[in-house]
Image (cartoon, rainbow, N blue to C red; front, top):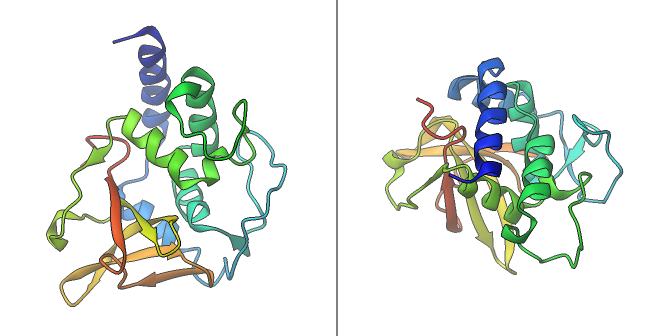
Length: 193
């Protein structure tokens, strides 16, 4: 294990000891955004760091995830930014940036996918509903090659878990797990029950 990975594991371990959110609490934190985050707006904004957020009534799909984890004691804005500083070459170059930008990096699905993979949180993508647990994260590729992310709910419809996400009309809980091509399945922190 290289030194930067050891340092990150130590940092995450310290954060995880203070993070008390169970998968059920993570789902509830995501669900609490329904009716609060009512618009989809991905406009670039300068955010406080760490803990920066756009106004609660707006957001994108990644904001649902970031806000849920933040309520659980893990700040993905800080964790992603610090990992990008250490391993810039591991992250996608889709935005022609020359260095990490703590205002936006945690709000981009490909960056979150890379972060979760680097944290050993990736699970196999499956077409079986029972493989997805409450609190898991799922990424999709929407029509037009638009990456998307949501949190698996503890509620189900037709034998499929619902998903809490913001796909354009504010945070919703919907039967959307298999509505689009799944590109990633994550359980973070890795190994949590």
